[in-house]
View 1 (cartoon, rainbow, N blue to C red):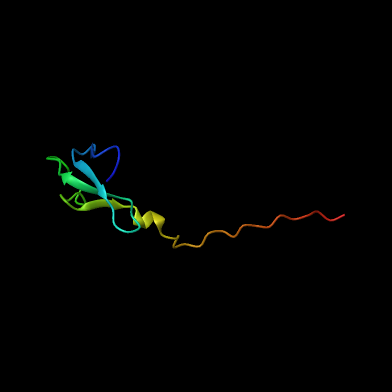
View 2 (view 1 turned 90 degrees about the vertical axis):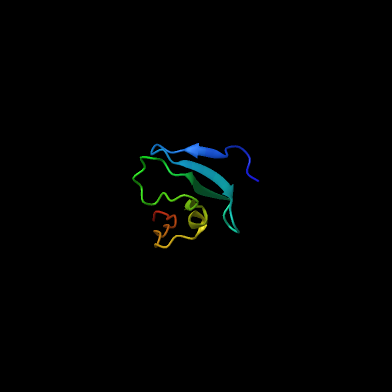
Length: 74
């Protein structure tokens, strides 16, 4: 199980809980209790808020090619 924090409260009033993740995801953050005045439609009780698997995926956009070092002539 996770060590350290087990719950957190967001500024909107929602309470989070941290659960063990699935394969490739160390932690899943879940809305444990929706705040009474929360207006965020993404905050739904018992649904994950953020999944670390997305952060572990390779980038989907092209990264700039690193330039080789060069030597000056003469």
